[in-house]
Length: 298
Image (cartoon, rainbow, N blue to C red):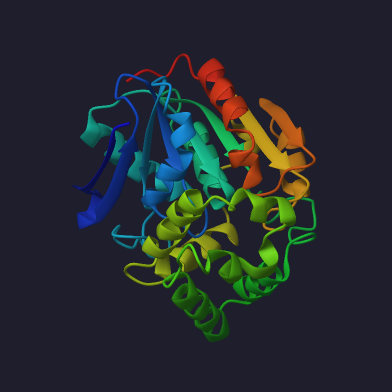
């Protein structure tokens, strides 16, 4: 299976770290990694690329990995970078897939880059902070602390993110489960049981902090403010995937998206969590992507 990494020139003199996986003749799927994360996480999605039907393209969001920071960015700002990456690779139409904190960024593409982006998949993705739900109810203790400080902002929050970033910067297959602590349900711990898959996951987390913790900080700040678009106005199809055993993004987020987005199709898996919804459902996700992305060609 073809895997490649490169750096490309981005807007405003920035650099964007890019990775691709799978046959370039397949349907273009732009993958938005979680929070935190990096472009290296695409290797964790290898089952989606083995058939040759999909060409996975991803980048480290601004401030993660080797991608230059874009201070003060909102969620909508990601669309400029996606367009830059696809243009540099000579790719046209696409669908967007976002996992966790990548979910809002996939929705941004569907909202602001249509018709080039013909649809979006939100996998355990978060909702706007002003949605009519208790945004943090059901989250594990680490997320409760982080989100409370994120809403407060200021030096205490920055110190907290710096501390968490220092932990992720040491991530290995041996300690990644410990680093996530109370954010992993039993089914998510089981999703990391394979040594190879756990190593890929840990490497991607560690690489996200190669140049510091500001990408993580900027993601959180973007979620705590206006996204720069209204997800309920999306005209393109949106596939919403979520599970009930998720301590990072509780199922209330997925349920809200499924109900509030007029074009949404709900895929609710009560027994799955934040990680297992990908590892346990890769065949179903591949089938859904192939069926729903027929119009997105290279």
